[in-house]
Structure formats: structure tokens, C-alpha cells
Image (cartoon, rainbow, N blue to C red; front, side, top):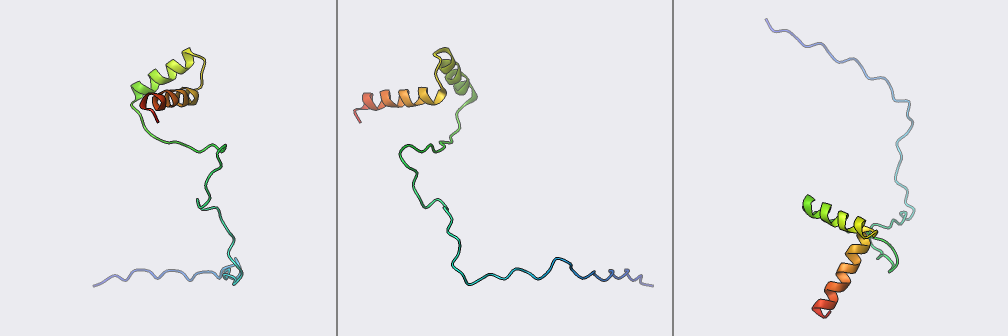
Length: 85
């Protein structure tokens, strides 16, 4: 003898209102990474380094009362001079 599963109860009618229909008006413009940042704008540089290097870099910056980004900028300037770029 097979056992029949109970039927699901009927759903209540929605009280949220009518669904939003896309309008034919022009879409809202979004930035979507199509514009380049200005020369004075800050942009993130994300890269991973070994934890020992990070600790050494941060300690060096702290000992010289500099921000880590300033140490990076200065070291890049010196590297460019060394390479003649």
C-alpha cells in the first residue's frame, strides 16, 4: 500500500503590489570603470607580499617616522634613477 504525501497549502495572494516594469527612458549612466582617475586621485594598489617582508617594511617605515606608502614611493623613485628610466 502506497502512502500519499500531503498536499502543499495554497499560497496567500501577494500584498506587495504590481511588479516594476522597465521603462523605455534612457538608462541611468553609471561610472562602471570607464573613466580614468585624475593624476591627483588615489587608487588602490593591491598585491600580496610575504608576512616577514611586510613586517620588515612596516618596521622600517615606523623607525624612520614615515608612512609605508611614502617608503614605497621613495624606493620606487630611487629604483627608477638606478635603472635610468
